[in-house]
Image 1 (cartoon, rainbow, N blue to C red):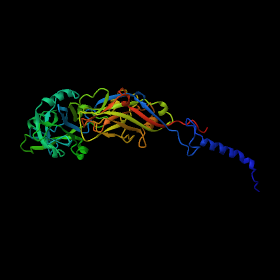
Image 2: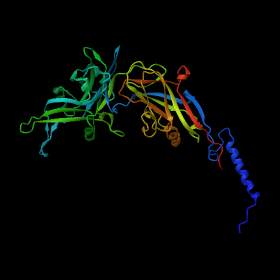
Image 3: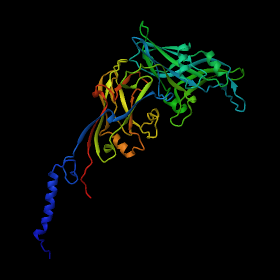
Image 4: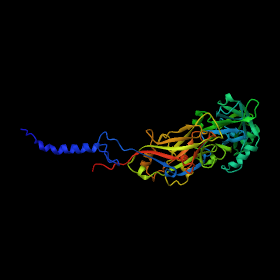
Amino acid sequence: MIVPRAPHRLLPFFGIALIALAACKEDLAGGCASPSLCPGQALEVHDTVLVATEVIDTAVVVSGMPPLGTETGLLVARYGDSRGDSVVSGAVLRFDSLQRQFPQAETTKPAIPVVSISSASLQFTCAPDTSLIRDSVRFEVIDVDANVADLDTAAIHQLFLTRPALGTLNVNKDSLSISHTVKLDTAFIRQHVTVPGGRVRLGVRIFSYGSGDSTSAAAVAITPVSSSTIATTGATGSTLVYEGHAAVADTVDSLGFTNFSRSKSVGGGPEFRYLANYQLVLKGTPASPAGVLPVGGLPSSRVYLRFALPSTLIDSSTTIVRASLILHQRGDSVFHDVDSIALTPRVVIASPIVLDVSKAALLLASVTTVPLLAVRVNPFETRSDTIALVSRAASIVSLWRAEGPRAMQRAIVLQSSSEGHDARRFLIYTNTAVPDSLRPRLHLTYIPRSGFGLP
């Protein structure tokens, strides 16, 4: 038989329920109410703004990006303004392995050396900036071989200015996107092919012309020959083609040779002396004004920003809902263009033991690891730009918290989306900007750590 429970035994349970209900209705300062115990209770959300050194303790400009020989395309350009050529760049194409012999059908017989050249040419394709070119351009190919160390680009720079052309090619603006062939001096190629160990180093420079005008601005990026060529040979944008002849009458005495320029593989590749091609800035972007950090330009620069956020926000259970880095941009009047480019943030993955900022600025996470959104704008505009460090799409703070301060620097790099391919640049105000409103700031929205929990 079931005995009914006495009514007075239910009183303690009613008391507990009333206490819990009262707690849910109470607005506790300091975020002590527990959402798990009080469904529907609003969380306490805080907003704060950190300015200048409160958020960024290190801001360094790293120039010369991308490093010599790692460029994906070689900019050959001549940007002009009312004062003449303001920025000039060229391409250096390196052919260190030349075909010097005819292989024989009978492999036991020695190969027959090449003794003469009947034709020679440089072949390449390019991606033009048609907004700059008025009518046509002239490519000039010159000899830039010099008996100097590989990194002595000053000597190569001088050769660009003084050496006569080995070959030239005039191309109409509408035909710049196709493959181009510049015929070269055959005597020059023969001197290098018939000498053991000889090499060929070619420089490419450009001039642009309008109808009845003097030279004007021009810019093209030398690109890989074709996807199949890259896959099979590693070619990176140019080929040297020549027809060689042997001195033996009873054999086939002519054969076309194609020599590809090759580039360093990513990670653990050969030393620089084995690189094929690189971009050389002959006249760079004018110096930036005082009090700003330049991003982009030629030679291109990146800006390394290291954050100094309170550990109570990063290394605790505080939940950062949103973090927006607000930067103020000074318009750069040197170059105007109707097309915008992007100010792109990248996450630094270098550990704190990497003290050289120029090296840390190269150790960057993939854009898919923390997909920070770029800001697309014209660099000549004066405006503020907002970069979301924490949003629904990405959270750099979560990465920092997971990795810890001993494993990863808390820093980002700002770079131009057209790094190395465009003379335009962003000018960002620094921590010491006047007035104070122009200094970088970080707007944080966060939920503080709860002080109420179950034992």
